[in-house]
Image (cartoon, one colour):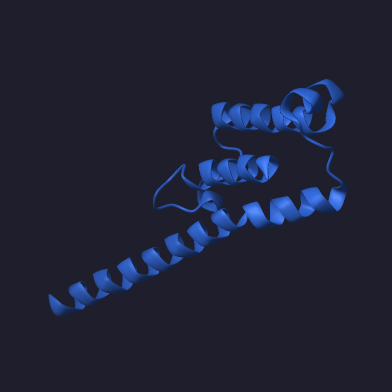
Amino acid sequence: TFTTFVCFDMFNALTCRSPGRSVFEFGLFSNTAFNFAVSGSLLGQLGVIYLPFLQRVFQTEALGFFDVFKILLLSSSVLWVDEAFKWWYARKHQETTEDIQMMSV
């Protein structure tokens, strides 16, 4: 659960970089400071999951490959839902703009 929440937060941070532009428009790695912050968070999370002394402190257990895969698949849903919303909003806004331009002719 802890790892799932951390991954949800990382994907949410990625998609919230722009309220209207897709992450794929400006690139996943275009912001160096952001990349360092996310990398640090993910490395810390891996430490909490796989380093025995941190496992004792945070009361976590090591996760298998398929567990991590399922967590990434589930937590990335926030990215895909937001990207779909941005696409829908841009398309709707474009149609509205075209309708207004046609009315003024």
